[in-house]
Image (cartoon, rainbow, N blue to C red):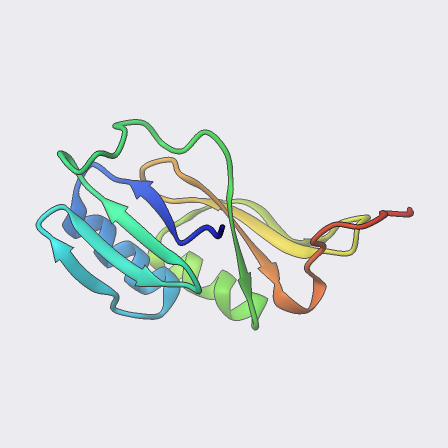
Length: 123
C-alpha cells in the first residue's frame, strides 16, 4: 500500500493553481475544471468547488521535503503564503518552516537532508 494523492481544498481552482505553481516552482497540469495536479513525488491535487474537496482548510499540516529550504521559503513569500514560523531546527533534527496558503491550508517544508522518518529519537 502507498499514498499517491493528497487533496488541497481551495475555493477557486484557478487562483489555487496559480498560487501552488509559484510555490512549487512548476506549472502542474489541469485535470478537470476544478482539479489541478502537481507532481511532488505523490500527486498534490488542488481541488476547487464541486470536486469532492471540503470547503474548509485541511485540519493539520501537509509536509513537503525540499532540497533547498531557503529557495522554498523565498517561493512561499513570493507566492503570498502566510509565514507562520521561519526556518528553524527542531530537537529531532529536522530543519523546516511553516506557512499557510491564502485559504488557510497549513503546510510545512522540510530540508530533505534532515528528514526524521521514525526510529528512536534521543534528545
